[in-house]
Image 1 (cartoon, rainbow, N blue to C red):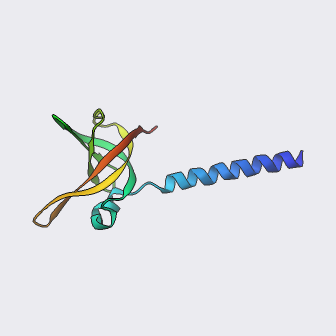
Image 2 (cartoon, rainbow, N blue to C red):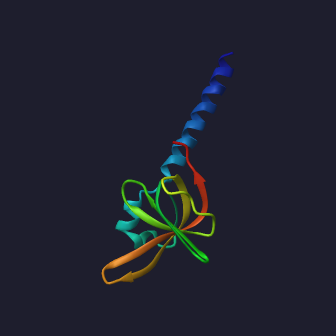
Image 3 (tube, rainbow, N blue to C red):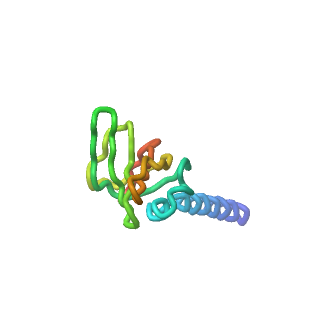
Length: 116
């Protein structure tokens, strides 16, 4: 019986560690926008609310705001609804610069709706 309790404790501890690791992989949008050169070309996961959507022929774009900042997401998937909460994984790209303003976007890999 004692061995069984220890096994259950070990499994529960392992699951909690995995959950903590998974949550730690999310990146604040503020961090990306404050240092886009460090993140350029890297794969990140961000989570936030969809605030704007835009579609033009082959380009699907939406803006995601996590409360620390907002970033544009370019996707080849169907656009989410405004107000929807999403977790998005993709690659950061500095699209272009105009004067002192850099436009940084996330090229989406796969959208994942999150529970509220």
